[in-house]
Length: 553
Ligand code: ATP
Ligand code: MG
Image (cartoon, rainbow, N blue to C red; front, side):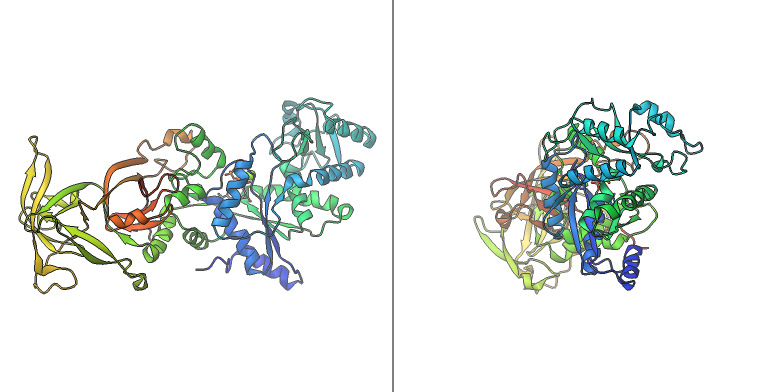
């Protein structure tokens, strides 16, 4: 699969524009730096950057930083890191809507001078009453017919900080009877004496999104402004803004807004505001907690950029909202890791096995393939000795014929090693199994077995004296259910993380680096934690299980 949006309705629009003579296709990804990016943003990133690639155009990264109360440079930095990590390159330099504050102001002056904007003193409650409803038209503001001169004087006074926050706004003069509420004289500037992370205290008026966004697009020469469906009703306002400024401002393009369905996933929060609540309330350990559906959380969990890009390609782009099964994202990840992740052995719930007929103090090194799907990855040496660990659940004292793992008196193969038989179960005084005594058959060594013996089960294991201790974090969904109408914090899964403190892993993992991904044989895919992992402190996150529950339709 490639990232080029081979065929979707947005591409079809662009193709038609190109056939009609349009050149220099120019898209943009315009995040507001008020939180970390999540999997939904990945869809928008893949789409916008993908369209630019497919059409030999360019894609801007623009921070939509017009609401200084919620914005922060920490978010700006994380967003740049995430876009790069996903594998995309924006057209330099990075753009900021705040770079255009001067131009937005000039645009507002132009609208005032041409009679298309006015300063309004109604407070927000009164404004709501004047606005009307979906079935009733609104009423004109009593300030609507102020003269151009008065509007210019008042707007300048707003800019100079002469009024309190909320005392006045600048509104576009469109149509209070419009069936589209967005056109009922929408607010385009508000007073907010707030420090901005880039422009400091220079401004105390800030433009509204619906005003700043089309102008930013037009200033940058964007040809196709792709956004999510909830902006469909705003498109007439988008067009109104451009149409009333285009000639005077000499914009390099006449951008076209195109809406697509946002991504929603089962049992997954995709709203920065809600994700911030999870962080602020301490439900998770930061924006990059491995359970978070943020790009940084998915990265820490062990997701690959390829898997996320393939997922975005697979779900496609449409005009109708739908809920995508999270299993589909996991499926894409599993396909990638199955192909590329090195295999190692790790025992999550260790049970000691003593091989009584194996020489004491002897360690031999066995050859083990790194990845059966990638012979060129070669092999590694794994130590084998008299004492090993297996998984507790791989042994039962008594079991029926369908249990192909180890039972008392039964035989199994140890992966890459020998066939062993369980002879004796050692228990503590309360009856808990603490150790197994087994014997091995020297003639059954993997690769040179000529014993003719057949066993049904193969277990993973780790040699005890050379094993390393590791901490393994298992993860489940943060939410127990899909997002409903109630407070989503009520649906938080209290057992979304389980930490296993005493796991045993093969010694080769001492060389792992932060972020490395592995298949722990039979246990799933795991990733060395990017925050806490070191060769003295082996911490792994469970990435995804081995078993695929995704069924293509
Ligand atoms: P949130 O609700 O999480 O705050 P947002 O839309 O306010 O999301 P922005 O920073 O404004 O976040 O989003 C940047 C771009 O990403 C926008 O073009 C937006 O349409 C797109 N986007 C956001 N969420 C999704 C999603 N779930 N699926 C697809 N695109 C999305
Ligand atoms: Mg937004």
